Length: 319
Ligand SMILES: Cc1cc2nc3c(=O)[nH]c(=O)nc-3n(C[C@H](O)[C@H](O)[C@H](O)COP(=O)(O)OP(=O)(O)OC[C@H]3O[C@@H](n4cnc5c(N)ncnc54)[C@H](O)[C@@H]3O)c2cc1C
View 1 (cartoon, rainbow, N blue to C red):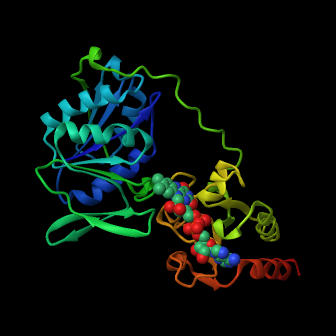
View 2 (view 1 turned 45 degrees about the horizontal axis):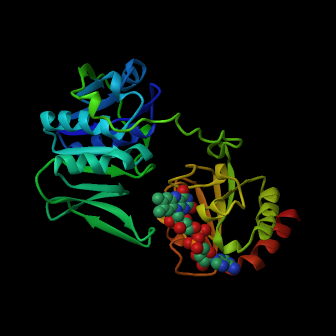
């Protein structure tokens, strides 16, 4: 049995849970799939999950699971996984997963492979591909030791809309946990910045990376974006530096987009960036390094200095 650990916050299902359901369906090969959703009030999220083509949905309830604490989740899921005896436990690589999954794996004494971006057959075993050294290497990792093995998938690795729909049996189970053994007292959850721009709806995107060198030069990309009628976006270092707002970041920790046209300027093509834009219909990359990984996903590549190409492109478009 493959067990999917779904995630909700305030009763709302995390969309990434559907991605993991899609992953489980692709890996199942006749195996049964169970989805477990831990929390307090799970009725709405449970109803949504009931439309998944899986064997069973378990709503693992306990008042002490709301609000989320790593201790509460580890206790409840440790007991649940031990009793369910799955061969594989799949999770979305969310912040919550980063928080409790290592402790859960340690408590179970089982292997955990995090942030995977794919699965391959390797000598009859499943190898999980995960980026290493900030995406410079992709390692195929085969879990060792007794099952269940725990695996988390990077957001965007599987598509939520590819999860097959059906009619799952939903069962409510009382989580086995002792609230007195929860050591954390959570504060009010962090409020993510309201997104002023919804890049997922943009038809054309011009994205800048570290190759742009300084904040002033972003104006060059902005002019190209205006000439194309495109939205401006960026790789993470640009947003980390505060040169563009966070809501314009594309990638695993930013937005996932699928425009008709994506122009990547001075972006190397790290996996964390590529997962956010590989769904674009046409990708144009401008980079002075012909070996940059962005060219592997680009439909058109311009190997040149962006400071020469951008003004030329913009003026050609303006004409
Ligand atoms: C947990 C985690 C989450 C992450 N999430 C994200 C995310 O959501 N989004 C994201 O983008 N990154 C993310 N990253 C970071 C990611 O790994 C890369 O570090 C980042 O994408 C690199 O950004 P870049 O391509 O702009 O910079 P670099 O990798 O430094 O690339 C700059 C490129 O510009 C080119 N260049 C330089 N000068 C010129 C010039 N004059 N003309 C043309 N080309 C030039 C260079 O050849 C190089 O290829 C994440 C990393 C981690 C560990």
